[in-house]
Image (cartoon, rainbow, N blue to C red; front, side, top):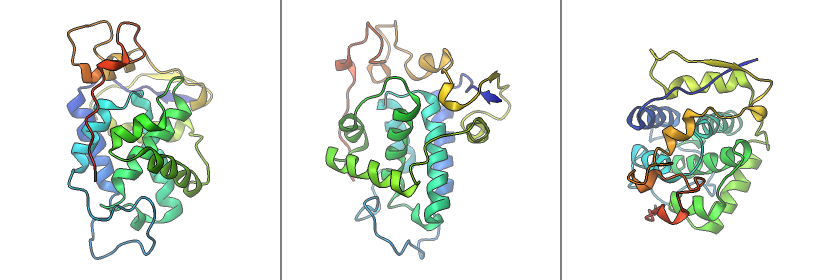
Length: 218
């Protein structure tokens, strides 16, 4: 089977595309809400916008670009299982950070722990653990992703006119990320003058302490 690799693009384009994708999943009619109140429901609509939250996650989450594609797939599965009303302005933030955490654990060879992602997402470590488990139950522990699904959802994270290379693989689990992935997400690898927010903690010259993780709460 064929799977597309994500092209080189700017952070601005990537964040915009991802923000628009998440916004399209949110139930727009405020008069309708899910009858169920879950761990994902915030007491009130968070003051931080979806785009601002996406910028934060993309800046501080040390995962590959492909994780964000898989995270969208997981959110789509959640909607299929729980219904479209479950994803709304009060749940989207916690759902997004949880889906990114799960995708990083599932497809990345190296990933950071729940405590790190909790700080990035502006929640406690205990809450991150609980959200992870509840998310898995709600998608029925179905974390495997086919190349067809990956190709379908990757289209929204790049400019339409970009030509996408393809590679032959058997499944997503055997997919090795393309070399440009790390240069896109972590441009400071090998460059001491780059923005420390994008320093790859996996680079030998980039100690993890260069990551600055200001808290955000909602």
